Length: 195
Image 1 (cartoon, rainbow, N blue to C red):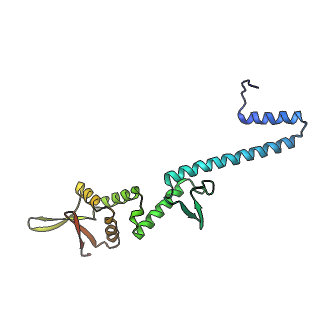
Image 2: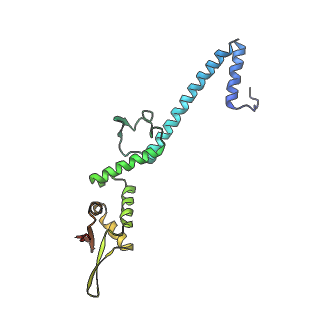
């Protein structure tokens, strides 16, 4: 019984079934039916294990911060990872996409305190890259100029303003003539003439 074999685990199981069939004089059809039912049971158990581990990983890496959420108008609890399947056969891309929709919804309604730190940093980077937003006032040879705030000045100002800057940025995106000028640690609204 303890001898080394070159068969795979699957082949060993088949061999055992054939040996039992010969010992009890069972027809081949019954052996195949019993073997197939065992295979289905094993496959089902493995699919549950895979689903469980996918749900745990997905919920940890990309999951919703809420303990209850709805998928297609059915409410599910994250306490039972067998109850649902994240991400419903589509991989973690589905979770990332729904997280983006959640984030955009929070931005739209101005609920910035419910954002994840990663989302806040990404929006601040987006603001940093838009050099047509946030100017500084300068007087050169008696002429007044508005130049884009750049470099570390821009980073410090964005960091200083925090999430309060998001409303101003969305107003700038909706109204291209609107902008802000840094005034020390604060800002002033300005409207440029549209040309």
